[in-house]
Length: 440
Ligand code: IMO
Ligand code: MG
Image 1 (cartoon, helix red, strand yellow):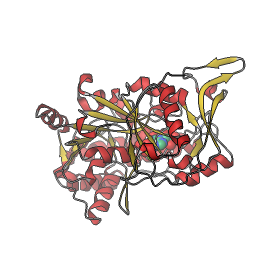
Image 2: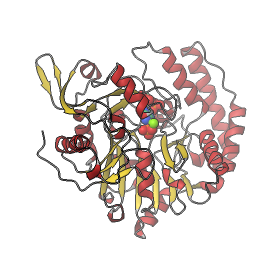
Image 3: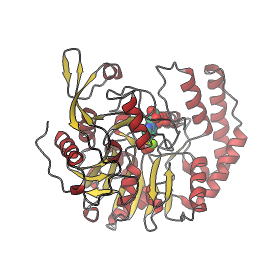
Image 4: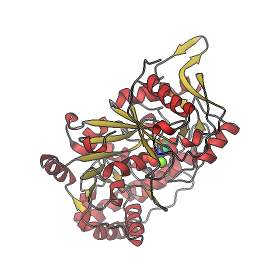
């Protein structure tokens, strides 16, 4: 990946989220003028490590940590003002500048307290095998209201305080009635307190609210380079993921077009981010899951605990069926493999190249969660490597087996792997000249 040569680029997670998009976006932002978060909300948790400092970002684009980039929160993002204000305050306390380098779309929808309440109540009313295992950030209910329209609020609605209060009162009334009928533990919403709090957040953020779409178009016309920061992962995509165990937004590169508001030909590169293994947090099928010592070891070595919820992540071997699907969905042009160091110390490592269900071999990604829960992975076994945290400066210096693993992944996936990460720090990143092999 020749950073300085990239045109407008999207960074897309190709698994179930938490692939390490934050680190890649951070590395790339030095070479970009604008960074755009275009979908999802505070369910995202993007970690960036700079020296000894670690930053966990939920709503702010990861470019906020670099001085020169303009950071946009686009119309497709669902914005929780409470979390956003806290996130900005947290960064300022650490001397990170947040000023006119941050702009929030007036078209973005607001995540309101009733959305978070409904997320929690709906999840707790489901049986254990049906729970989606959401982040409880109100994402699903907010996107549902957006589609419904009559009960939705947008950032621009804060402009007229009187009207905003009226709308909050109408909606809170309606939600109180619905929640009381549906859920036993529903607390009543206090419309006035909510309106006060949200209007105050709006005041605090006033200088950051803008027509970010117009800003983005202007920057593109001026030949500035734009980086689109994907959130969540392709297997959590509302249309293409493991429905219903998905999030409520579109997580593939096409979402850049519909959510940020640029034409499909704008994107010149799509960087797919994958871990050298798989993880998933929350419910849903996960064919390569290792519910054993190996999975536990990956979790410990990779610090696989949620950035947003602290939940332990489920860990498993690399699933090439899922990732091949995701590559196609987003038109990925190059790949970054993260956490290769975490796989060090295993005698053997495995890659799932197909699924088996009874006598049938499945090579395409199944549409139904029930089918995916019922498949057995077909594994290819490769030799592991014993080097723990490799202190190496180039890809060529990695142990032979680690290099072979990357070369094999590249051959199976059919897309160049141009970047390999061997630790969370910016410096623990190896660039690679790819040589895509023969395929399966
Ligand atoms: P980043 O951007 C990992 C998962 C949740 C749950 C499902 C639905 O850090 O990669 P939601 O709260 O969105 O309705 O939950 O999606 N999920 C994520 N998992 N990383 C994320 O974001 C996620 N965002 C949502 O765990 O299974
Ligand atoms: Mg996450």
